[in-house]
Image (cartoon, rainbow, N blue to C red; front, side):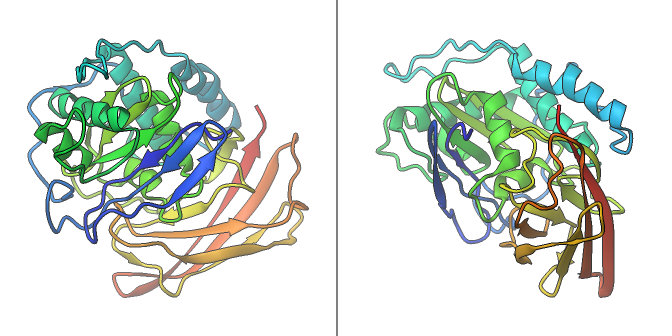
Length: 344
């Protein structure tokens, strides 16, 4: 079930606003770019001074180990969903308030869970400086019941700090008590209906190092742009769903209803092809194969799969992926991996 609306930061060509309607609200999104202007720049900058790391890191997850994957799913992912939420603000009074530090840390730990599943370093940390501004952005989205990375000064509860955060954050908006930060992160990674997959790409950005987290009962702002860590290039790229065992959960991935993606820093996917087979070696029909709009974190290839003959649910469903003709540094590269969906 789709939970809420969302929105992405834009850096190259301004904000794009694709939209979809879910069962629980309108979800809109707009995604990042190349750092060529304004607060949405992703150029390396000094990390904010107030950075907190309290139980937020995630050690690498061996996705080839079914038991390990399911242990983390049951003991970490599911428990994070139950993190208590509270808020000290008031929309009618334009009081941005705050959420508990323990809640913010849980949001960051959820980000790191997804990253560890994707084979990325799960060491993103929380900035209290950025979070304070993201809190203002979340209030503005809630108060105006819409999402905008460039909110006008005429908006209710407008602040310069909130506007700056809006230009550098993934944004989401939903029904009350449904789209706090925990729910927002899930929406960003699944990114249903968002053809650029900009939210997912920012959460799984190879150089993401520091985030800010702001929430009201209806809105979330996750500051993701402008505080890059060192260059990091995963040897086998960044796939979502990732290679190995993957819990079949609507907040992680559903193979038939969500867009598959493969990212690689500074790659050219313009001539890339995708082929897939099931566990019996039969071809799985794919569609929409193509390079996604550039400027949203790492360069990315996206596609969807068709039919259902490959589906073994509730048993494990194994799908094999081969990606050819990825140009990296002038070299034609190919990648092959297998994803096995596990029904919890």
